[in-house]
Image (cartoon, rainbow, N blue to C red):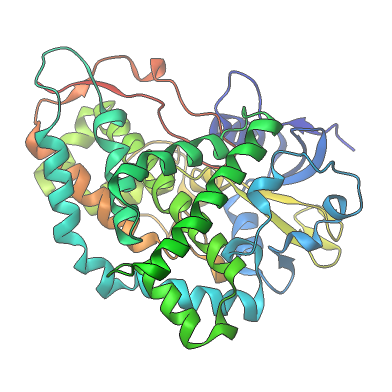
Length: 403
C-alpha cells in the first residue's frame, strides 16, 4: 500500500495540495494529518458526492465513531479536537441533527434571509464609504471582505459591535493549522467562556435577535435544546457564519481581477449570481470538511475504508474535477454551463447558511465593482498570501488599487 501523504504541506495552499494529490494519486488516498494521525482523503466529485449523500447511513459526523480519537491513540491535546468535538450540527446525525437543524434553520429560511438584504446593502455601502481615499494600495480584506460578514452574522445573533472583532480573532485562530495545541485550547476556552456569559446576558436583556429566539425556544420546550447545545450552536454559527464568506468574497475579487474578460462579462451581463456560483465551484473558500466516519467497513472506489477511520472530504478538488466539469474545470468561467457543484456540500449536512452567503457575496461584489469600476490588483495573483487552514482558504490580505 502506498505511503500516506502529508497534509498540510508547508509553503503550499491546502487547496493546491488536495488538487495535486487528486491528479497524482486519484480519487481516494491515505493521508497523515498533523500529529501523525492517519486518515483518508476523497478528492473526486463522484466519491465526495457519495460520502456526503450517505451521511447518517454509511457515514457519521459524530466523533464518538472516530475510533482512534476515543481509544487513547490520539492525545488529548490534538489541536483538531477543538474543531471536531462539541454538541452542534456538525457532530450530530439522524434525529438529533434534525432537531438542532430545525431550530437553527429558522434563522436562514429564504424569506428571512431575503429580508436581510436592505441591511446587508446598508452595511456594504457604509464600508465602501469608509474605504481609504488614497491612490496607494488598499487591503480589501481588512476594509471590506472581512468586516462585512462579521457584522452581518454578529448583528443577526445580537453580538454588540464592540465585541465583534474578538469573535473574528478567535475564529481565525481556531481555523489555522499553524496554531499550537496550547493556543488552540486557550482560544477555544476563551470563546466558549465568552459565549456562556453572552447567553446569560441575553436571558436578562433579550432583543430582536436569533440568540434571544433560541433562548425562547429553550424556555418553551427545554427538551428541545440543552444549555450545552445552545452554547455550541452559537460557537458554530458565529464561526462558520462569517469565516467562509470573508474568503468567498476575497477569492472572487481575486479571480475577477485576474481575468479582465470575466470581469467584463460580469459587469456587462450583471451576472453576479453566476459569478458567485462559479466561485463556489472553482474558488471555494471551503477547501475540505472534517470528517466523516464509516459506520462499517465501506468500499470507496478501489479501496476499503475501515469502520471508524476518519475521511477528509476534498470539496475544492471535487469542484475542479475534469471528469465532472471538463478539460478546463480549473478555469474560472462565469458563463459556464455546468452541473450542480458541491460548494455547500450535499445531503443532510448541506450548509444551512448557503442563502445568506450567496446574498452577501452577490451584494458585496456588485456594490464593490459598481463603486470602484477601475478596481484592480496591486500585486500579481501569484503574490497573494493565503491563510493556513485545512478547512477554509482565502487571502490574508488583498492589496488593490481603487482608482
